[in-house]
Image (cartoon, rainbow, N blue to C red):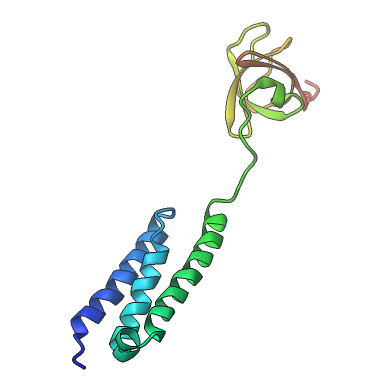
Length: 155
């Protein structure tokens, strides 16, 4: 059997390129075809008769695809861990702690607070400076009412 080394090298290099692309840009689902090309390339280069003339070659490629699928599932769970769903209503924010990112002026909606990764307009009965920790006590529409958690120290 005549083996075209160039074809084997192309398969191996193609597999490496796809695996590298997956590491650079997770989520492209390139780990599975990259692994298949890598296994097929190595089999073609080192045992071409196994790949082309027996049932073991296709079985090895299928096993590589299955293993790559399992590895990819765990890899995606590690790269993009699940998180709590973002709150879309103010009622779900009541009791949550937040940080003031724009000063809160009494009885206005000029203040802003960060709750987890969201930013909300905030109001309070007293002025609260940037950086203060607050607790959300009420929500209405697209704004929240807050009260300060860490009271200012004595002057």
